Each structure stands twice: as C-alpha cells, then as structure tokens.
Image (cartoon, one colour):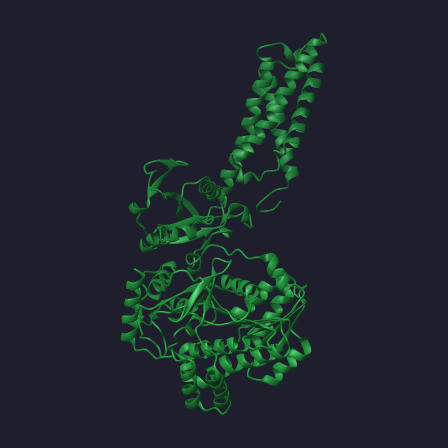
Length: 626
C-alpha cells in the first residue's frame, strides 16, 4: 500500500465486509422481534441474495472508487444510491415472492433498518479514515487564509483546502467582494468586509480563485491594491478543472506583478494568420531575445515550412534550439549565428534559405548604454535594419515586419532616434515603385519580463533586500506581456498592406513608483519599512513620459481593436533620401559626430529635453486629456 492511497480493490473488499456486518446486525435485530431465523436454510439463501445484490450495487454505482481521505457529499450520494438500490430490490423481490405464494425473503421494515445501518457504516468509516489521515499528516506550519469571494467556485476551493491534509493552509473565513454578506457564515466560517480586515502575523494570506485577478486589480475595482496596502500576501488558484494534481498545495501560486497588469485576452484571426505563415520559410532576427524567441514560439502553431533563427548571441541561441527540440520536435528550423551589421553574411542567409517572411527584432535597446555608444546603436538599429530591408527588397520577400518601439516617438535618446531613422528607411523603401515586398512596422512599449526590463531589475533588488531604485517619482511607462506583444506583431504582420506603422493599444501608462510599491508588497515586504525606495534621477536620454504617437501623426482603426495605424507626415523627397545615404556613410566611417548631425536632420523631432521641460509637458498633456 502507498503512503497516500490503497488499491481500489481493497476498498471494495472493506465496503463488502461492512455491508456484511450491517446485514448480520440487521438479521440479529429482526430475530429479536420474530422467529425469522428458525428456518436456517431459507435464511442463509436470502442472506446470500441480499449480500450479492448489495455487492452488485457497490460495483455498479462505483461507490468504492473515491479516494477515502477526500470523502465529500458526492461520495455520500454514491453510498446512498447503492444502499437504495439494495433496499428497493428487496421490496421488489418481496412483492414477487408474495405473488408466487411464498413468504417475503426479508421483512420490508428490516430492509429499511439495514439501509440505515449499512449507510452509517460505509459513510462514517470514510469520515473516520479521513480525520485520522488529516491528523497523521497534518502540516505543523499552519497559515490561516481568507478566500476572496463567496461564489460556488470559492466555496468549492474552501472545501478542498479543508479536505487536503497535506496543505499548510487553514481557512480563517471568506471576504465579501460586494460588502453585502457581513455577519453571515459559509462552512461555519465568518464572512468579512474588506474594509474591516486587518493583517496579523498569523492571518495575512488571501487566496483568489479563477480569473478574478484582472477584475480585482482594474481601475474600477482596486480590491487587490487595497489588500496589498493592508500588507496581505496574495495567492492565486486556477480554475478547479485546470488543477494539475490532487493536492491543492501544488496549485496555489504567489500572485506576481504580471498578473496584476494582465489585460483582456487577444483574439487573433487564426485563419488569416495560417494563410500568411503556414508552410512558409520565416526568418526571425534576434531570435534568442525576449521578443524574437516568443515570436518563434507563436509561429510554431501555424506549421511553417522552416524557421530561420538568426542571432549573434551564441549561448542564448543554443538554449532556444534546445527548447525547440524539446517542446516543438516537429518544427523545422535552422540556427544561424550572424550579426545584422554583416551584410555579406546576411546575403548568404537569404541566398541559402530564401525566406518568404522576415521578422526583424534584432536591436540594441538599453537607453543609457546606447547614449554612451551612439555609433553602435546607429550601426545595429539603423544600418542593420537597412541591410535586412535591402536584402528583403532584392530577394522579393513577401513580408518584412520591423519591430520598433515607443521610444521612436519624439525621441530624446539615441536608441529611440536610431529606431525612428530605421522606421523612416523602411517606409522609404516601401514606397519605391519597384518594390514587391510588404514592409510593415510595429511599435509598442515596454514588455513585462523582457531582458533588461525594470521588473527583473526590481525583483533582483528586492531579493537583495533593497534598496529599490526608481529614477524619478513621476516617471511612467506603458507595459504589455511578451505573449500579447508577439501575438499582435504576428497579427499586424498579416494585416499590413505596406508602409504602415502599426501602433498597439498599450492600455494606460503605469507609474513606475506604484509598480515598485506593488512588487515590494507582493514579495511580502513593506515599502520604505522593510525595503527602502530611493530615487536615482533620470538617466541620460530617459523620458518621464513615453508616447506611442508623434505629435504630427494621427491614427486610424483596423479590424483589430488593439491595433491602430499611425499615418506619418514624412515627405520622402530627395533631401531625405540624401540624408539616409549620408547617415550610412558616416556610420561606416565610424564618424559619430557627423552621424548624430545627420540623424538630427533626418529626425528633426529628436531633442534631448531637460527634466523641467518633461515635467511641464507631462502636466500639459494631463490637462488636455482631462
């Protein structure tokens, strides 16, 4: 026998023995009021008939299959069904026997008595085993938890916690999310109003069930924010049908920041995407990076002919190939070490594999680092993009999708300006009369959990007990999940007709200071009490407020509610073309000063704004929105 369960056959034998004992008790009880047992041969026959009917009922209704330590109302129902089947069968046999001129095989009153005794034995034996198991395996480190909500799902989760002897959690009560059920009880436990609840050393944990996290953390319903401010630890549970094991303990997970920033799921036009990407050779640059690797994962569902993974980082690319081998063994792919600055190497890739679609995600993206290495930012982000655009044009690639950034809008740093110059070049080539490639640009903000993003940085600082450094108390950023961003990139890549800049709905901007507070609280600490928050000042080229659309741009909707088209006002006259050509020459000659001068002429909105100007601009924008 296992430590945690016994064979179902043994449970069947135990149930049969308990029914046998119940039957003996009933026959003995009946004999005290009648001479029923005098005809011993007839009694033994009837006894055997009733026993085998009961055994048949146990097997038919499968009442022996339940795990004893998880006995609940459903198990009791199955016991009742098997007992009722036996009692009713006795009644029917009695009627048949009387009609044939014989005596009853067993008194009807005796059948009812047997039913009560048998059910008592079967059910309370299970309750006894359940209680004994919980006592033996009781977890000594108990955490008292509250269930947020009072729905049927919440009650079912509460029952599961009560029934799980291995869990360290013990129910303290329910929290009403409506405030209407105060002073009432569920499962004998009290229901609290969120405003009356206070965290203590032993009662400081909340469990949220199902998909309520998004609703409870929205702007209109800030329940989770309120609980975090009260210093509660918040845990989440998936829907019951998605639990992966019997133990509830294995399914309870700590709520993280990504959960709080979740948005409505994206609805993709799967049939259209399938037509665009199915059985195609697809080149993904930066394939080992955060965005590139997830684009590859998203593409696997469309069964491409071949995916060309191109990256200059050897170890991450190797890790990505191992993931594809393990998770997507049926996907054909090639791993190519290459630098987008090396046009000869890129030309070899295009000649060898002849891609139908190109997703260009390779880039230098760290703003302060690129401020110190401007020529490298331009070489990779502009000149590298130019190489891929030119080769896509020359090899008649069907679609070229450029992954840009919100920092390209009214850029105040080299990274953003280099991306904007790349956007301009993509659009200039798309307007050539000889062009047969659909060139598409996608633009979005910060991606949660991407390499070098603020969330892993804060998480590491919290693990080291702080301090958590925020550049400025007023700094805000747009955020979306990697999965969401890459799905929208694929959708925009399929809907583009050429030359568009697709802007994604990033939701509302998030204050980085609020983000830091929430991350500290989600880690079980108190901001500026357990872990200090310090302000380090804006870094070189850093904005207070990011934008998704430039002042001189407007947008128009698409069929997808989260994707808009930005219409740029750039006029691609000969002077602009000359600036693009000059910029390439200056970069190749490693002439940083001339490169930046050409960049400023090409991107006139590129201005290094002072902190004071950014604050005043942010206040002005807030008034306009209001």
